[in-house]
Image 1 (cartoon, one colour):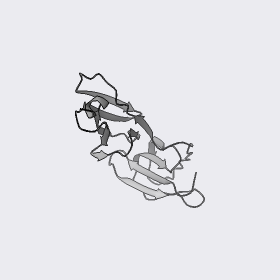
Image 2 (cartoon, rainbow, N blue to C red):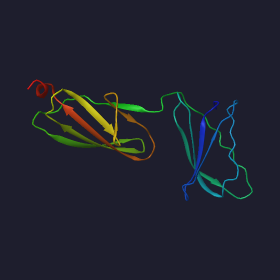
Image 3 (spheres, helix red, strand yellow):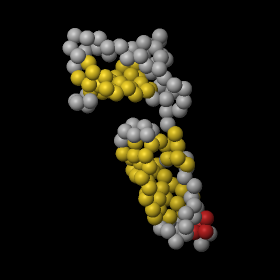
Image 4 (cartoon, rainbow, N blue to C red):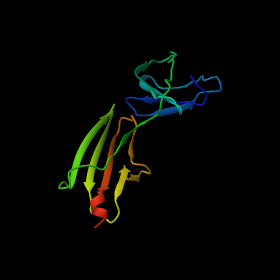
Length: 153
């Protein structure tokens, strides 16, 4: 384990979340969790997210969850290339990334300047990619494409 990693225990039945950081030696301890089923996750920049589900805690016991973080990025990106038939105005794509679903609406507009604008969950993206995270949620993506020909009108 690495120092400063965030370890999260989420109660499956309650949704209650308890979060701690690993110490300088990469060790963590979460105390006083209620009995029940938990999912434990761990994240740190530069490493892939660790998730282990199905952990059952019982009264009066101590559980040890050994966490191993793999090197890698926290997220991936889907790059958007503005290219589809000129007679299409829009199309929709539902994209699954691990356990996360992205609802992508692509619209071709006739604006003044050519380019691509992307928003994810209402937040404008700086680059021409859709950042992918495996957070087990649904995300709504709006891609607005202005073709080169439309900008020269």
